[in-house]
Length: 88
Image (cartoon, rainbow, N blue to C red; front, side, top):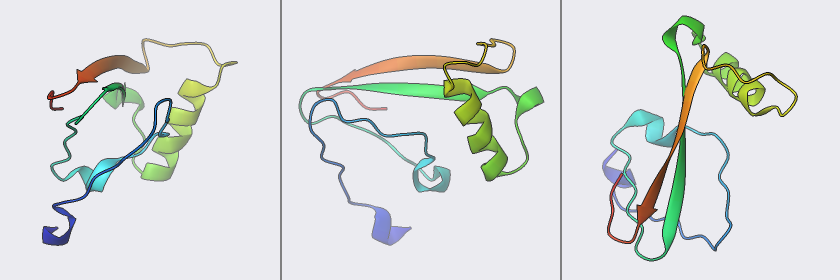
């Protein structure tokens, strides 16, 4: 992981990143240098969480499908607003 210690994502306003898992979960953090970032977080509850990544991403696709029924029983979803100088 020593090679992955210093990189930046630079984007323009309105940029959207789809579901992903950063750096295999190894110490990922975000600090906006300017502007704001709305960070969406989705956690599939353990009872419904698949054993492999492919099935987990299918579960995420179902959560985002506008025709599926929202289910607070299956997952928790929230947002975090990061402003310049904040860290997540």
